[in-house]
Image (cartoon, rainbow, N blue to C red; front, side, top):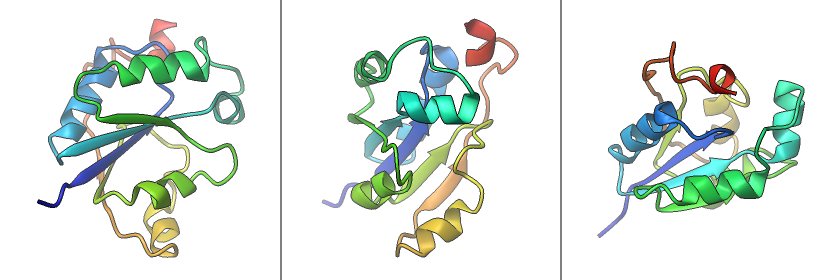
Length: 134
């Protein structure tokens, strides 16, 4: 039986119900959920500051989510290398995820990858948003 792999990305700093909703909904789109946790340096580059929890703590928290089949750290350099390695059928993006998503389909097509890309719906975004919970 062929398993349908789903790939999600995020910082997951202060893991909250919005993240759990995002991951649960992503898992519904396939059989095997791989979650890429952003490196500390990547978060610094994107958000201008380090996360509250370091990458190993965030990786551990995401790994403990029961329906996450595999959690890995992203790469500092080539942000799309992890997508090549995982070769997912589906990529799920958070409703407010902007980093590395511009022209994503074209970036992946140039690497011979053709996953379905879904933009997930928010879950109580006025309540559960990392920037509001820190």
